[in-house]
View 1: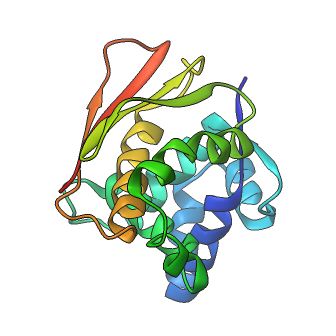
View 2: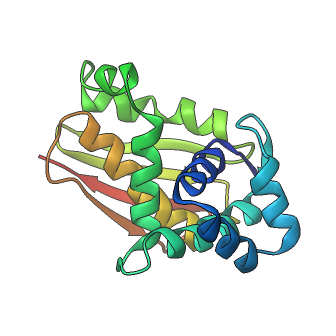
Length: 180
């Protein structure tokens, strides 16, 4: 079983607190009690089973973005934007986009206890983001990652970011990325 750090869940919990008790109660009723307990008590450094994260992402995305055609994408985009605020947002504009993308594997390996990450075919306006060795990654997380990638790349200053999932091999999940 794969695990992920609870960093994104802590941000989602903070977003919920900002919306009030009604939304927190709505999420509590949508999640299994043990999953909601994890959301309420997790710390950023805690390891969370990937299936638990997927359940929370799914329900939180519907709560925050009920009318959005891609609520998981929107949640990933929003959470990534909250991770990179202040000085971090400024620093994303200093190195090249290629540098940021090449170093994403370090972040992935810090946040996941299984699987490896790489970027194939990197050019000045695109590449393929690949996660291998993580067949248990759910469709929920793969859509969420689209939003995260889009936000991080936009924070570097590039325009017209497009992220397309290539889902034909569960041993190597891929996202084709392009930008201007």
